Amino acid sequence: MSGLMLVSHSQNSHSTLATIYESILARRGGMWVKWSGEFETLSSELHRELNFNKGNEYDTLTFRLTKAEYEEGYHQYIHQGLWPVFHQRPDMARFSTSSQIGYMRLNETYARAISDYAMPDDDIWLQDYHLIPSIKMLRDAGLINRIGFFFHQPFPAGQSFESIPNWRYLADSLLCADLIGFQTTQDMNNFTAWVGSRFRCEHLSPYTLRIHGRQLSVGVFPVGIDTAETSALAESNSCLFMEQQCRETLPENIILSSGHFDDSTGTPYRISAIEVLLRQHEEYHHKFSLVQLASMASGYSHRIKELSRDLETRCGEMNGIHGELNWYPVSYLSNHYSREELCGFYRAARVALVTPLIAGMSLMAKTYVAVQDHTNPGVLILSQFAGAAEQMQGALVVNPYDPDAIADAIHTALIMPLSVRRERHASLMKNLHLHNCYTWAEAFINALQPREQEADLSVKSGVMLSNGFSGRLRY
Image (cartoon, rainbow, N blue to C red; front, side, top):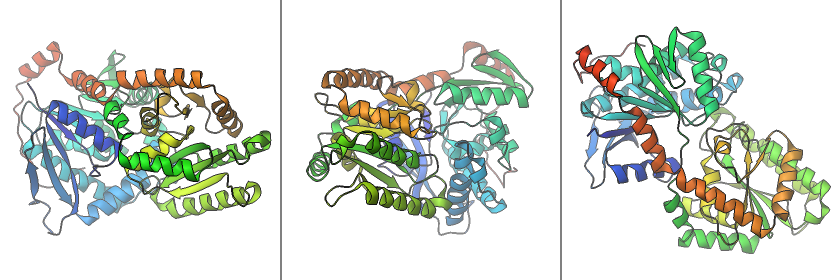
């Protein structure tokens, strides 16, 4: 039986994705390859120390990055370049030669670690666009392992992808994978349409291409959460305390929105929707508060200060016009809360306003549903352009660019009878249980396994596995 080598850039053990990876590996075993979160002090990158830890449930392989790899490759190339491109804003992208080199060196570090520890029958599962070049680097190093790649971010239209200066190398690398997974059908269609128009390939089936003499499978695998583990957070002391604090200090109807500082979150449209709601429904004065939690974690990093300033100004203007001495329609908070504390906000919120302009999935929507009190659940309002909208039919789905539609949805949520809220919540929970992180992983890993014909072809090819990884890689 082959082992699983799961490779991710995330080193934050408290993030939702990190929790998902940990849950998957704890159940099925394998190795988690990731950055340790620490920086390398030695100048020689060829002799970088790898830290292997054999655990009871799964193993970990960690390593340090240089500050240049992190700053140029991660902060600049990924956040300032790839993020806006993959979120359909190539006009906001910033690329440079130094950031491109940093990105490639970051991936060389990952590829060396994988190459050193991968066993011949291991399945290698790379997570997200941080690690696109690693696929080709592993092939160039001689690995013939099955390699799966999953896009957590939305995949853009081909024209946007080709705005990346070194897009050809990234494309060649992606085509070296055995399986590429996407969050939504639209993302997969964007990829296959672009590949079909740009490269000479044969469509063997809707989910299989033959290109450059090898077979590439694609599929839609919406990421799920560990529903049981997330629901259990609602019973933690930190969650219950924060829920009580919110109920004691905020109006009876909390409308919660949480996200990063970037141009894809749709925050200005949400605030405009609150203005529409107050104009159309004077009865809501003093009856609700939009709690906007904003974090600095990702997005268009070079615009964080500008976006933060604009948000503070907009909230101040809104509260100045509509607020009173003891009530403000918008509360703006910097998100520095723990996962348990965030769940307290979620449980206290009558409405969750998850309306990004574009999002791969939006795990906040799933977390909000999972921690609700099923006897008195809140209502989820979800953007039609979030990946979660394909699955979560019990949500109120809206156009995130339309403040009037958002305001109508908020009004619908606030007057929704308890029986209807319970019915919708039960439907959403059923979906979360059916499509959790375990079924997500199993579906992807099963799709990564070779079919009988493919196995015969690999045997006849006579390719020998070599874990050699020497010298500077060409790109």
